[in-house]
Length: 269
Image (cartoon, rainbow, N blue to C red):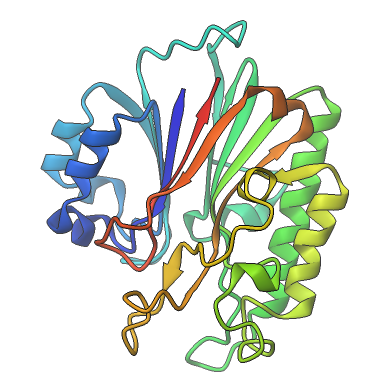
């Protein structure tokens, strides 16, 4: 089974930049998108046509042209390592975690064997009107972790992917010293990922590539950051430990252009 995840920074914009060619080439079983910046009725016709072998769930922001997430999943998924891939329910309404409904930041599907979260985590930087958003970001992380632990304690396997908007360690960012006071690399933010790790969640990329440097998933559009590979690793697959036996390979598709984020992929065995 192959899962592809990407912050598209606008689904309508990325469709003009070879996105569907990449999807056709990779042929994922599940496609997770963040920052779609569109309501469901604005989904382009070419995307609907290209994904006609998939069902989907779409969680829109209340604000036009902002945030939003979507999951496309193949109508017929075969993965013999799991006893069943019958969908139990789609989770795009978190009544017990209202913050996870904000801006359509979370889509999730609960299969009979595991739960997949697709999340566009808050950036945490101050808004243009001066509203402080870091505390909102930290609260979002805390509520997310509570929900994941509830599922794990109930016996579920959990996969979380998306744009986490945090670089966990200095190895995950090209300029750690220069960014030690930057949103996305603040100690108080990175501590939330420490908590995830201590609670039993695993960063798949670092599990498989513990010392690999210069591998990022986001590059600023400014100052030629991408050609110089001055990037941040903001996009992840984190899994519960009871998923580890099912992991095969994770990839950064860092040569794929069209957004300020590159796609990432995870194959399960």
